[in-house]
Image (cartoon, rainbow, N blue to C red; front, side):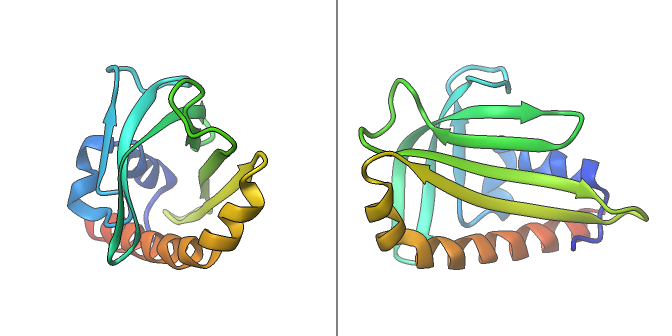
Length: 143
């Protein structure tokens, strides 16, 4: 639970330009165009562990619902890796009295999905937990 309104948390996770201030998991996201919308492609750096930074990954906004505070980012259809598609969901659920339930998870599809799960499931779980803790601290500080 985050002690900040869902709108505030949503504004933080959708402000890609500010990620470097608080987000050690994804310290950089650069939109390839200026519109934050479904289909917009972006490049990112992603820290899988403290020592393993994936640089210049290519992804896209797969779905965005501005009214329900739901965002799905994932593998770019035009520049992604063959054999694997990722879908990372981030959802800000309002819980009344200025609180937010933040849901963050990733699904993998395609022939390489079992291998990616085997190699990265534990690392992603740890990285996402750290991401959520950092987001919570930042949102509560800003609120």
